[in-house]
Length: 181
Figure (cartoon, rainbow, N blue to C red):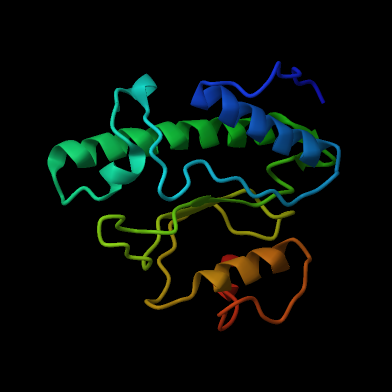
């Protein structure tokens, strides 16, 4: 795959994230792996995002107290992360892989472990799934799952879509059958 060798770990966040996502795409292209986990913003991070006008630490901002200024800054950080992931998705879509693209033959989950960081709520998570899972996934829609559906049900379903069969994952209670073709 065509990618530049970095001179080291870049200081700029976007450059670092791009290298990590380029490595993931290269691993997919070379069929070294089809599973990658990457954390764009870890819990407790004091990282600032001056490049998008947010000089405050990420974690302290997450305890926003519903203050409009803090929510606006969190929104800027979320949009920034989303643009970076969007570039990765675009790269997968533009990369040929057999009878389609890497995106056609992959599943990418992007989201957060909290729906409200201020209250540490972990229900109704903001999650997006990209890719076609080798043609096994219905795409282009918004799905609202029943309340109290464990996140691990989605993980179990995603494993099925990629032909990795297992009966249970963590606290899973079943598969999300309506996601399949």
